[in-house]
Image 1 (cartoon, rainbow, N blue to C red):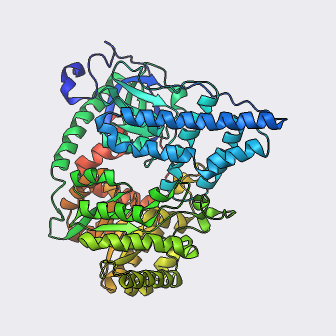
Image 2: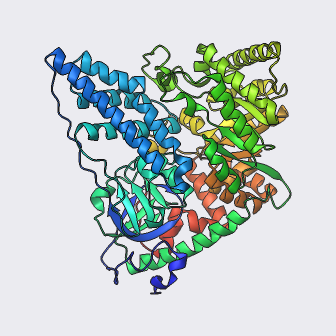
Length: 627
């Protein structure tokens, strides 16, 4: 076996990271979700926070209730002060993530958390801890009913803020990562946003959490610092002991506990190769996404914050294909004003100019506006008042955002407007009517805006696909939102552990819906983009390119790999392959055909990033959830 200690400069471990010998007993494999690509090998460091005691008792006097209310208010105030202190002490490399702490500060005063907890104390006479637990549980119920993974993942902010207050009420200190003295792989149930931005980057080889998703703060921070991370690794804290040797594969989501020498040797070599390959394609990320036979597509980025623009440019994005605008509306005590929204949109436009910026109007459910709008009781919020129908229901809210977007469009004239979750022509025409009304009002006030600002819609529902030929003449572009389109097409909630394995992007119906939308858009002379996780999966490029998608929009970290795949492809081959795929009846057949193509045409990419190819090469079995 090659001596890996002599290759320190190429790896994420050194002499102190591994013991002098490696045990040869049978290893254990844990499967999670790859959240930040890369391979790391090192010792496990368990960050285990003790359970917070939650006493349950009732208050039997007005005096006791007043004291308990004051205790809750004091705990919230102390939590705010702690977060402010962390903000002020942030190291320079984490300053751009300070907004994560600001979100928690806003949550602490959110009406659905703060006011609801006080109501439980004062009206139902519950103790402070139990009151806070009940208000957080109610918020979690609302979040979990939503199909949008991004919105659901923000529940981590609520949990983290609540956890801090509960520890203060219990008289416990909030454990930090300051105790780490060597380079380790952090294993924990959950890494809160405040934890994530206090990571000691030079001592963090990798991160494994038992919960979370690809859009969680842990994943975002890990990717920004190129730290391999795996989330949703169930029971990791029970199956891994302090000091265990681990291999963590942030691409496939696999964690090997106490690996054999054969496994370490294989992953070590793969780690070196992966790092070299990643550096090579990142250096070429600024080149256009031009196929070998001369067809050019646009590769764009999805972001939610201005701070992500640096990553967008570094990874070679040619535009912003989706700017999520929900951040300014969530966890606030009041509705954001037009001026705040205008400044944010204008700054983004100017930072990206002359490249396009596509701003999506508010894509939230009514339950998140309860702080300043009447609370609506909905049995199923995912099928209720959300996205464009929410905006049409509250036109003044909609007009405020439209005014801000239009005003921002005047500066660089590179803004495009996009309506989400449009289900039919009626919604689109009403949205356009309100937009026209706002334009006329701005003209009357002599406030400049881009009169030719393109307007598009997200195609996310089967109903929109069915009438895409009718919608296309009414807009300037389409953007296919694959996350919702897949869920609504095959009735699968990927957050539901019992059916998540059925969430299949390669389902024949999904691919046919994409094809139908592209054909309708092109027939009307408009461009069609693809947005969502499917767009950021390099392995799907041969199919999506062959379906003649005009632009791919994804998280910034996926850009170099997708661009690389496009630049190595031939459009004529991809078209032929996509047509063959469209004739297949099952996702399994499509998956098998795609893997055959990838192993032949893109062997290096497939071998480095496809989980099953890894296990086949080293001859030991890995469990995998059914697809």
